Length: 277
Image (tube, rainbow, N blue to C red):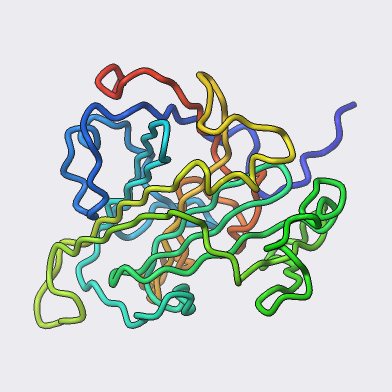
């Protein structure tokens, strides 16, 4: 008899997504106006991270890639676009933000961005893999460095135990852009929302790919685990069960740090013009 699925999400519902290659250059200015973004398959509308119920406002995302970058775009409906943090590494989760989590077998990367374009990023390595997967031999991943500490997770007791969080680590070569369709931090009018465009260089994901020897860039048919989130400093009025966190795929617990619940992203070398919408 197979063991019980030990994670809070519903295994049989985890989505698959196919990422195609762009057909025109991606500017990474946050506007998402390239023809490739118009053709790219959108994720399902984000739902509540905990309940899986419909969220108050629309949020969608799409993924593209080429031999240099993994591209991620967000479309965020927001009637009052606000943000306060301007310094990189600030606690962006205390603003309204969007978040990207990319997982390898033994480590995963978290990126948060607010509407001012300020970012926060962390690399997490599973404690049980730090030695055996070679992370202890990577100079920038020394445990005795400032900004490195244990991380137990948030709302879910993960069966793998603790992680080591490297808050001192920045993904090399990262590019991003944000565009606000409205007036930032001005609540005298109504905004349409904001869009986010991210380019993650494949070479910056070497630490995630290392234990399995994953190809960078991916080969045809390779699969990565990626989940995308939106966190808000407001809640929909009762009786709605709004946790304040919305996700491409719900984890069914207040914790975005569960890689086993991340959607499967399959990479194809086909151009996005061949995508089925």
